[in-house]
Each structure stands twice: as structure tokens, then as C-alpha cells.
Image 1: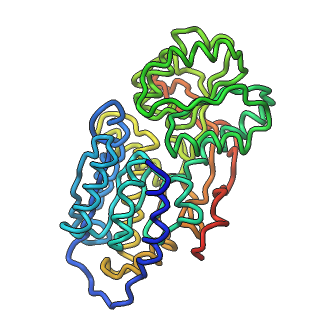
Image 2: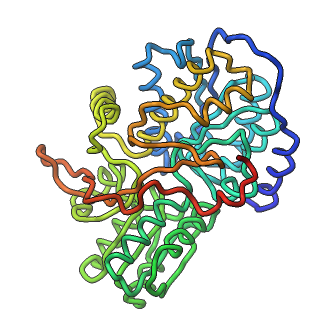
Length: 394
């Protein structure tokens, strides 16, 4: 994803003034869902999709009291395909909302189509830093977490441990750069290695050799999906875990990774905004219903997809079904209360979340399954992002 294409959002946002025309209640809610549903990282998109559709099912097939018409497409992990799907949904199908994308390079390729056509995009995952700051737009809501946030929490955790040296690894794209910037923002020790790999890389033998030579106290990686699964397997097989602590962002040690890696995950610490054991009633219902429906435990991706559907449901209901009134929908989405599975949640002025971030440890539950459990108090409390000051929205 090139920076000029990201930059184009500035002019598009300026041109996309909010409609002031009165709107009548719609007869249904149309959602265009675009996500990575094939290839090595498909599990992420599948979890978002399954949880989103579970929320719709539990609502009797409705969002905000209106029948939900959800069209689902696979972006094939390709920005050009994602852009084409966004264009089709906003121009041909004229959806009320777009959602679903996992990866920020794909979302940034498609988002100008949504902004130009005044279609609201609610992100269940990708939340890149450029759109949090000077290039913010009223048509983008991050329902997950800012790209930097998990990594800021991990950096704070490493600082709390008084770690003196860290080796950092991420793919060479916007979210990868955001992630390591976030870690370094809160980490007070030395960085003795910072490497950016090809997006989608699955063989890390060269990087592991460099880590062995560097001898850091901690390795921190941002490697979503199949990338992270392969890295952890290779890290463990190389025996590096005997001398080096591996800290992960929440998605790097979540249930999809646990299922693929197995017992080597036991004892790994990670940072996340959500956990299966958060005690609020909405979360208890979500975890139970997801396992019942899909015969697997939910990941944080699933929690984000579920919350996105709950937010749409609450906002459409609060707006009395007037989904064509974009001014009203944006205002309602910014302020409406809904029973988030993460508990306390609110949007900042840039429409990125303010929320808690926790330390989780992979343990065995009463049934002998490997699961994440929240450890202690939040690492970061009511935490926003570093870019909101640059966003002109109020």
C-alpha cells in the first residue's frame, strides 16, 4: 500500500460533506462484508465473519430491528480485489455499511471508495495510524483497536519487567510499521534488532539465525495469521525459547494460533483488549454461543466481529432505522451505548476506541484446553491513541 494512496483520503474526505437531506426509515439494512476468507490467513477473516453473522442470528436475522441483508466476499488477501469489492458494494449494491477487512493494506486500498461515496466503514480489525490522525474521516470507525495499541501495551509490559534488550520483527507494511512504533513508544530498554519482512512470509530461518546471534532478552513480533503460526513453530523448534522470552500481541497467541501450534504455547504472555474470561454478561453470552454454534473457542477477531454487529444494531435502532441519513448515522454511531463484549468502550473524537488493554497468559482450563487468561490489572487503562491530536474532527 503506497503512501500517496493513503494520502488521497484527505481530499476525498474534504469532498464528502455530510448529507443534510431528511431520510425515511429503511425496510432493511444492507451490509457489504469484505474479508480474507482464503489462504494462510483465512482463519482471521472467518472468525470475524462467523461472529458477525452469529450476532445477526441471535438478533433474529435483524440489525436495529430491520432485516439484515449481509453480502459476503473474499478479498483473497489482495488489495486490488478488496478495492474492486468496495467499489461494487458502494456503487452497484448501494450498501448502508461496509465492514470485515482484516489487513490494513487492503482496507486502505478500498476505503477511498467508501469515503467518496459517503458509505460508512466500520472496521472489525484494521485501524491504521494515518486514518487516526490528520487523515481521519467521519466515514471510518475503528471498532477494534488502533494499530499501535496492543504493541504499546506489550512495550509497557516489557518496561514493567525491566527488560534491557528486545528484538522486534514485523512485516513491511503499514500495520507492521505501526506495531513496532507502538512497542518502542512505551518500551524503555534497548532495541538490538528491528527487522521488516515480506508480508505473507512463512520461512523465518534467516531471522531466527539473526536472533540467536543478537541474544536479546525478549523477542516481540507482529505476525498475523499463518505468518505468526510458522514463526512460533520455528522459534520453538530452534530452541530459542530456552533463553529468550517471547512476548506476543494478543492475536499472535490467540485460539487460532494455539490450535495450530499446540502445547508449545503454554506459558506465553500476550497483550489484548479482550479475553474470554472478562466477566461481563455480554461476553459470557458471546463465548458460550460462539462455542455452541461453531464448536470452537472464539478469538479476539471473533470478539471484534461480534461487537461490530452489536454496534450497527444499536445505532440503527437509535436512529429509528434511518440508515440513509448519513449525518444522523455517524452522530449515532459515535455516541450510542451498546453491550460490548469487552466491557467499557467509547469512541474518541477520531472515532478510534478508548478502552483497557490487558496482559494474558496461556494456561490450561478445567477441561485441559489451552486458553488465554487475564493476569492482574490492565496494563493500560482507558487508553486512546497517539494520533488523535492531529485529527480535525471534534
